[in-house]
Length: 537
Image: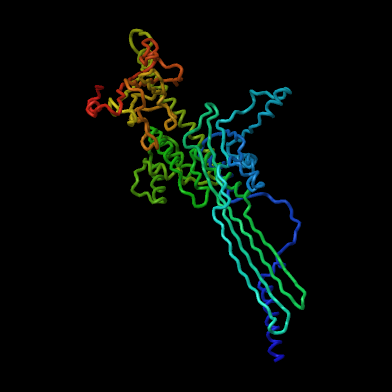
């Protein structure tokens, strides 16, 4: 009998030691506070931030000056939650912007500092750099308890039936929760203080929080021994926000600079906004300039080509080699497929940076050659005049012509409008619309066609093919006018040769090539026959 009782008591004791040996004893939790040295703060996007600057250099995008306004918590939960998320993340944004480099320059936003330096006479504002764009945004969502889970394990028992005053109680509790944080970024044009279409980034990150609590107690001979421990693990929410800050900056500046920034991010998909902009760039170039751009990319890619604008044998061979490497056997040499493949696959190493510097000198020579050709074309009438047997008065270089037409001549309010135009020689073109109320709006250039130096040999369309928006007809009803003005020199918006009613000024219009079109704006109740005939009832 004694032997059986001894074995049961021993079994209970072994159970107690087994629980502790399995790591359930909360007193085994590591609680040492080791002294550590400061370390550099890095994230999975730190290298991508630096890579964006290198990419900006390799793609030859030029300098971009960025100012960031204060970026703060817009949800109002940072204070009630005792700082679970930061109230102001402006410093994170500044550090990320300043860490890019590569001709992307951070311009501080500090009105108080600017005012103080001006008052003390230390500022020479003519030497200060103004930003091109302003980064605005904030933390827009913080959901603390999207998912909450709790698990409990309880064990208890006594050994009183054995004549031994011993009891055992064990409790194990596990809790977990999931929070969601969202950060919005937008770019604003510094000159106009207006938002830039599609230049925005909205990113969300999930943050986990877990709590584990163990309680162990047993009683021996009337004395109670209790063990209690608590382990709490929380993913750093401030560190998580730093990640979405870096990601958002890479996205929004990558879009603005028209860079394949997704190559810098793990498991990222190509951005359709950037790819559409590159397609628009390809179709806006003349055939000669398309070849020159492909030669530029081939050179940076590592191929032995010259930038000439001519599809010579070296260029053909380099394109065929590239097509074979990228599985583009069926693509024509000067095509959208080849252009996009080159754009997305330029090397991002220091050798490519060196090749960018070398190809810039080749591009300078190419542009000089184009200028020389243009000058020869401009001076040809003058040379013919000097060679004539009798003197003739000097004549102005021929302006060329601009042609303009619409897809229809009558539209219901809200219907899409398409505008087409061509030129007979390279010229700057500005196109405006004047509605029946006398309101004037610029249609070309626009955010999707910001280069208004157009070339002959192709038909331009507003909006461009593949653009994510339509140009729709608006109220009021009546007759709307479309006016195209073309010139050999850039045309400012305040120098248009138009009257208030949208007619060309006879004297001023002689300096420009002009074209016009008109269309009827009809209400939705007007007949389909009127639309088909183009005449208002």
